Image (tube, rainbow, N blue to C red; front, top):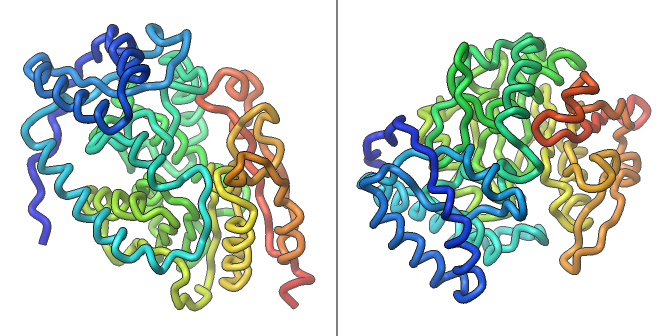
Length: 372
């Protein structure tokens, strides 16, 4: 049984603004393993000042973006968290022979280069926070929009606590908010408005490319009708972190399941699937694998959220190992899913322009003709 160290301190301090200069030097003279060790050494030295050095991609907007970054202080319990996370990751690494799903952007070497354990919720490949031109202003705008459209009361039932390096903005009338919380609330409320998510009896959610499990945390806390949130991923490290995080959040283990595929699933009574920023980061072969799995599970609805990119989220493009892009929308049609609609992430043109990481929501419905 895991023995959890005490939770991270909620005392927030602004990260040192000159850290970007240090990281740029490290990037130019050290390989990433040496850089990681050096950063850990620096963090140990500056920990009495309640600040933390975390690599960030910020380009020419570095100072403005870094000024908004807030993290829990580095404390003694952090090493215990790293041990806990690595234990879960190693368990999934030993099972990776089960994986038959190719990856492109989420290769193992790339994953460990970009994650900074135990701060896996900081700006990284899971969620862009300092990138995408996200600022405190865009966070506040997005919070106002989500709060005004929060039919499911996600912001009431599921609070942001800021652990593990999540970038937060403090709203005076509410408390801490993050992109993690706001994206999850927006996605769940979109599904509520369009398909009546909370009214689906014995609901199963297949979460493809679930990352560290952020949507599972909020769906389980919000939806009383949820039977199981199934977190699926082909990356052992992500499954290990997800397993750690959901246990840490003390969710009812009967409400979630974490796994590679293939597994012997039986089609649930009622189910939907979400692929949030995951299909954009897979090769076409993998996207087809997941779509065929969802067809086998007789999933009724599929919500796909592509990366914004230059097409502003209007296209469904897979990413091959060599970086080439392929449209996969035709695969959905061939497997019995028709396009129900393409919706802006924010149903307000101003927020869609200036909110957090705007893109489009692509909703697919199981074709009646195919299901006969």
